[in-house]
Length: 203
Image (tube, rainbow, N blue to C red; front, side, top):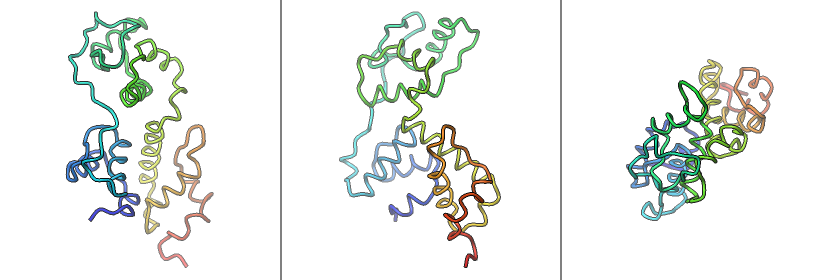
């Protein structure tokens, strides 16, 4: 049986979270952060039928490159971050190829979640020019934690601990407010007093 303690103390890939959401009748589309929210709501007593998607997915027909301009609404217009939008931004910035930025995807999700009917393509360009506007977004926080955890498990030192995920969480809490929080082996030494209780054969 899935419990709050088990869920909080284990690392799940997105496909694992989607499986759990489908198993318990929860919304199964969205980011990892959104899927986790659905599961935690259920574990805290909210009935699955009462847990609604945090945002509506854009199922409208996609706009073509020629239909996109600076005033195109991001919501309910058919605008999507697809190849047609890629062509538009490549043309706008006079580039042979354009790669979408993480900040743009975060902005699109915020628009959907907040049902922001005022946001336009112009706002996406503003985000490209100033990505710090979304740096404190919960999605960005999730990405940073995922990278931190991935690097932690690349360090064989994790095998020295009984509950590595708890150790990683403690180290993450200690550095997460840094401008660019990253895992490196020296953190184990620096914060050893906080994690020594999880060391195998600790006395």
